[in-house]
Length: 522
Image (cartoon, rainbow, N blue to C red):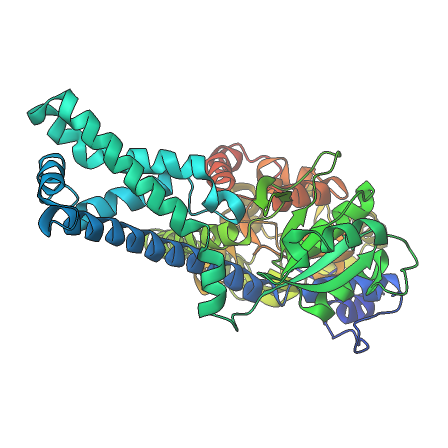
């Protein structure tokens, strides 16, 4: 579609829906039940906070790794210092010093060599992960065993298995004890060193009883990394002590500025998907106390905190890293593509100008990331008076409206001769490489839509707008114009909810045969 749907009576309503305005809240964040249009507006407003939330979660993850790495290397330094005192300064006597010197000659625990081996082993065994994982004694034992084996590998061939095996066991035990002794008090030490470090603003969702049980558990009930904001009642009419009912979830999430959402107990499927969609759109971390229903559209990961099992449904730090690499891919591919295709772009622009009056490029306002409008560029494939040509035939216009503002290519009077060829070959989309370079679009993503189409996505609108629109995507390789609403909306939402960098690469590879075979290209 290149032109806005004609005589669309809901234009004003649609524009007011997409201009996000703050939803007032009382000091205790309680909100009243919202009409459907205001509820959708509140959900879209959450996406304004998504980039900041993703950055905060990534910063916390990086901070955790840095603190743990510094603590690990400090523990290694303590072990090496003790070894030097025993071996070089005879603090336990000459005989023990000689024995220690035979087992651990100078250079065997070289600072740089062993430090690299230790950090690599801890990364491989997952000991820089979240929650109780970093204090798992078994994981630390495996890491210590691996770290001790790496520097001794070459020594095995020169000194033999017997002496090296004993040396290995002693070194491994020393390092393991040091790691365990260092990892368990690290949280309390960090709290003392950084007493005013901001805690994670946490919102709970579920019944009053279920949320109360989780909020008072050791994981959340004591001073730690979580700051409890309150709970949203799963009942349609919220308990007086709740911040709101489940119908108010999006507005409460926005009002409180929560960074983590914890789902307590059972929510029905509709509630569960609404909570997940709004939370993902806002870039918040989602945790769920283990539940019996199947988790759809997210990648669950079991996380232990103070002995409490939690299921992490979204991983903002991981998504932030993947989005960074996605942007690097977009910048590189769009820049290279524009340079390589510049002769073709020039020839197409000339053909468009010679075929019909008007500019070679056509710019149309579409919805981008977080609902922000942008100008989407294409080679012009319609006559400049396309609207008047369509109005000239009332029956054809009625068919156009009934068919979701589309017409079969062979019966569309608005298309130019060159335009028909451009659409068949998808060459009309090439100027969108400029949009990708500018950051308005991505190579892969949901198809950019006009404002009026957002209603087709219902409560999934915030999720749909949480990714940049793409030149290609799931809809383009699975039928394109042959697939209409609501199937198209379900297809796009499934892509967004299961997005990954690997899936984008798979879609790029499948775009080539889709374009060559002209599947749905009209």
